[in-house]
Amino acid sequence: MNYDDYENVVFAEIPSGDESEDNEEGDGEADESDNAQICINQADEAVGAAMNANIITDCQVQDSNDDFSDDDLIPLSEVQAELNKEKFVWRKEIKNYTAPEEFNNEYGPCNFPENLELPVEVFLQLFPKSLFEHISYQTNLYATQNSSKTGKSFLPTNNQEIKIFFAINIMMGIKRLPSYRNFWSTRVELRDNYISSLMPRTRRHHHVYFDNYFTSLPLLRELKYDHVYVCGTVKKKRIGIPNDLKIDKSMARGDGDWRMTDDGISFMKWMDRKAVMFASNFHKPDLAETVDRQKKDGEKVTIGCPLMVKDYNSSMGYVDKADQLKSTYEISRKSKEWWHRIIWHFVDVAVVNSFIIFTERSGVNTMDLKTFRLSIVHGLVGASTELPRRGRPSAEVPVSYLKKNVSLEKRWDKAEHMPVHGTSRRCAMCSSRAEQYRTRWSCSNCEVGLCLTDKKNGFEKFHKKNY
Image (cartoon, rainbow, N blue to C red; front, top):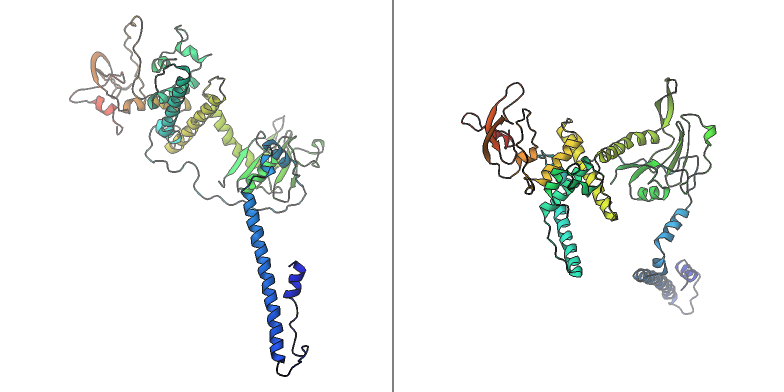
């Protein structure tokens, strides 16, 4: 039954008593009732047939989803090209603007213990021990598979050795040499005694801001559908940007021109010293504020600035700061393997994020980045693991009148700290510039002088956290 038949049956008039002809006396009421019932039955059949047709259609569509179609064989590059071909219709009017949801939830790291005191403890929250275990397991697995092919034996690694390996690479970001081999060089001018002693040679509903390397209009559209709010600068040659904006010569400093798509993607061209382009999937482009700028002669002027631009500048400062911290002591490991660069990038990011969290929790800048990285190195290395020294023993170290600095990780680790009696030196716990205390007792692991008498027990205080 087609749609027209269905419509005729459903909407057909039920004949009235006057329109029906009674051929036999007493059958009028029955005939009228029978005709009405026939129409109702036909309507029910039509509706049932339509419903069955829909059910069959749905089943057929659902079954077809289980099978591969020719579209599944289209290369991803061609799919991306088709997406890029979608046109963005720009208008000088605000359409389909939806204010972003206000983010009131807690931000930053969650489920962080409150009793984290050491930099390495914060780092291990972001780069957990389970990840070291996984790396150790996968390293041994790969070595086993490779050994079965080459027939060469290998010495299995362990979690602690992997930690030391990561600590060495973090240290190399602070102490740089032309080649990593130089740290184990036989030439005393190049060799690093500390690193070479550790091991032989043989890592929604947020507003996201990024630069023009990542910003593309199709990406902003997709992220908007996922409720991810994004703003960023845009390259002039990006596909899909509006082509009817004001030209640079007609714009004064502080001028702006914008367009907006029907689905809420806004595009802004703003003139500072030069024209800069922005795109956002959550900003209202007609909102503007002011910023102060300085002329060449030193005079300060106030110019107009779109809210989109101001938000971007204030937020990208955090990204630039993070990049600066990352690049200061970045792990530099040249390798032919592409994944090496990725893993060391994530280690650097984890160290920087750990430093930021540690600084925010402490409330004051009690430690600079280099000291923080060194503290992580000491925490990952743990107890002293120096190898036996080769060659002629060095001359006796002269007595130093400076107080030796020992990291908290080394003082508080679970290694055996044994008192050793020797030459007189300053007590690392009790002595100060104003009042010096000397002792013949020292710690075998920390290698500093510590008082150990009935009246003063600097040895115990030095190795306990509560002091």
